[in-house]
Length: 231
Image 1 (cartoon, rainbow, N blue to C red):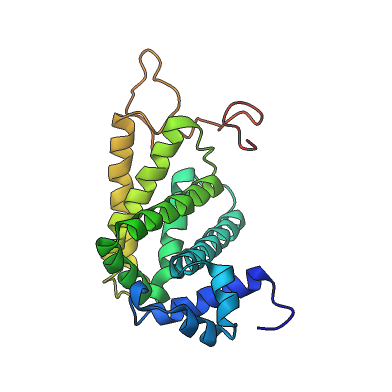
Image 2: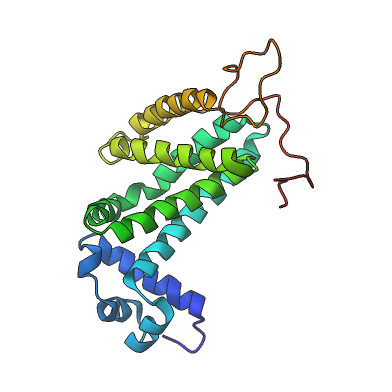
C-alpha cells in the first residue's frame, strides 16, 4: 500500500487479488491476510476497507458488469439505430464474452452458493443490478411492477444461458448466442402472456400478443413523467 492509495484503489486491488485466488479456491477458503499480501496492502487496512471476502467478490463482479455494459453501449452507439431487443441480445452476449476468461471463478461461486444461501441471494441481487444497468442502457425506463418483472425475466435468461456458456468451447461462443436468442424468445412469450412487456393494455381490435420484447411503436417514457428516464 502507498500513501496515494485511496479506499477505492485499495478495494480494487483487494478485489482483483481475491478474484485471482478464487479461480482455484472456494470463497470459504480465501483468507484476507493472503489476499492483502497479494495486493500489497496491510492486513489491518484490508479488513477495514473490505469488511468481508464476499464484499470483495461482489465488488469485482460489479467492476466486470460495468465494463461489459459500457463496452456494449459504445458498440451500440457506433451501430446507429438499433431495436431494443437487439441491444439486449448484444449486451447479454458481450457480458458472457467479458466473463469468458473467468469461468473458473464463476463455477466456484455457483458451487459455493448452493451451500451458502446468503451468498446465493447476494449473487442473485448482483445479477439483478447488472440486468438493471443493461436494460437502462438499452432504453428501458424500468418503471413500476412491469419494469422489475422485465429485470427478473432477463436475469432469468442470463442464468439459464449460463449453463450452456460454461461448456461452450466454440471460438465465438456461437452456442451461447444461439441459446440467448432461444431463451429471449421464450421470455417474450411469457412476458406477453402476463403483460409485462408493454405498459399499456391492448386497444379494441389489437392483438395482445403482437410485437416483440418491446413494442417498436412505444417511444418510451415521457422525459419528466412517472418512471421517466431521469427519475
